Length: 252
Ligand code: PEP
Image 1 (tube, rainbow, N blue to C red):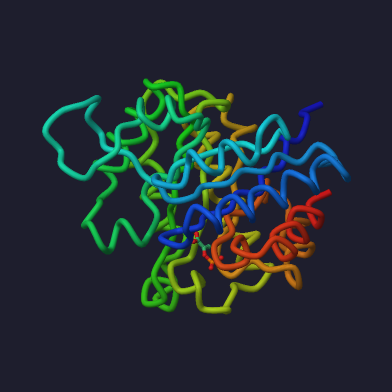
Image 2 (image 1 turned 180 degrees about the horizontal axis):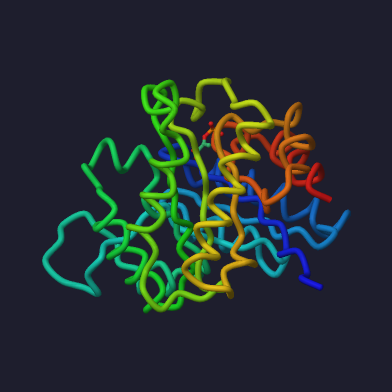
């Protein structure tokens, strides 16, 4: 019998916060972890790179994981303003978000770039959270599954194992908008992602597939109950202790 993968609830703070905010939010979550435990759910915080140090201190040995929001594909070099995967690892990260739709749009990142960055992340001992998702136009044209599975095939590093990557399905039109797909639509896409993963490798039956896009306390339980949804990538709701904790609790 296949064991279900451990659920992952990841907070993407995007470009929000200060050192004081980061210490406060991460510290409150760490307290909640020591009071209540996490019931087997993995909790991950992905603050801006400059706040990783403050978050690392505040989470201490609470069991909360730390992640970056992006990394460069190169190991090091003349890339002003960029952060390497090795630097994130050195800062205490276990994960890095790669190919978020905001980076695909703002920085013209295509599947080949995402693949190269995810490969760099794995080489440095990080688990890339590879983001894929269709635009509203693509969904309305009935192309959601085709687009998402195409991005998946182009973005997964060769030689990956189930433990060395996480996939996040994030419909672009649902991010930060308060709109979410129906549960049937989420189910259809997650099943298609699982099938596409299994067609690459049998081992990929236990790759974690997160859903992201306007996840909040009110909808988390029903979304996390959908088959092949193995956690959530949470933006706006991860900036408030009670909201993020409620989403994490919905996973237990
Ligand atoms: C995200 O940033 O990946 C995200 C899903 O944002 P939100 O939860 O705010 O839609």
